Length: 433
Image (cartoon, rainbow, N blue to C red; front, side, top):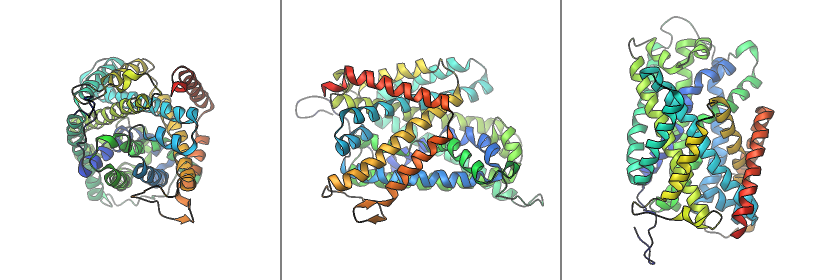
């Protein structure tokens, strides 16, 4: 599609159903399949409470995204929020830069998850498979958002069906062995600290709700559809996660879940024999789907920053397919380079740290804009306000800051290094804005 000047621009092709499935698809990705066992080892049978806490944190910030997206329905959302709220070029540039970093690192994390399942089934080298996946998905990203959305819808249906099977099996198994499961049991009676520690880890399973707003310019009637789709994605994912956690601990108990490399597969196969291969295929779809959406988001953020002249102009060039092909290529190359690291746990943690910092900035932006632009047209407004002050945004700000204390110091140092790298880029490109 071309604009009045004859330049290609992004197509508005996504409706409420497609965008909701888009959000559900990225949330229901690799996290729930890969991390539920590790989380059970920390929180025990009370893992479901960790999902509830994580959902509350996601909801606080999700509501802020919903209101902000109704004011600024543009690509590079977080970048635009902080720019309008604080008018500090380096701050907004840093947020945009960290979103690109988070998308790349998270895409690599789930690409390794895909590679693990793939090599378990067919053999091969994990790093090579992960890099090959990034290359293939980047080609899909280049083809166009509508085609990417079609792939996402199919994958979302498949991976959601896998979780529904776990829930169904859990309901059938409930109480059948005559053993009552204490759903509040934690390892060594660790209690609340264990539940919160697990929350910091399994929050990775919620990452993605914020990415819905980054395809606003490709959504029909974005101001109304984006907030609705965002909330639908969080609610649906939360219900599924809680039911899956309850079913899994009911079938296996937290000890067996923690010891398993494929916890959901083992949970189902312990009740339904010979179902291992089926669930491995579902895991492949789940991880591939998540990686695709993260690559899409990373390229669109880079496109948005380039459109605002905070990155080189070539990243905002739109090709005949209606996609920013230089941005797609840059994100693909960066992701393939990161696959050489190979440390999944560290990469996932860096993703979480980066996004908690961004969530802090987003919630702070909403609070600031309530006073700076009180009369801005909003098609959605977060509930629970004291005058102009958004209480839920403040809770989102505090919870995001609080979660940073649950990560190792060396990972925080890496995050600081990434922020400094962004400062170098800002000096080179951002100041020209």
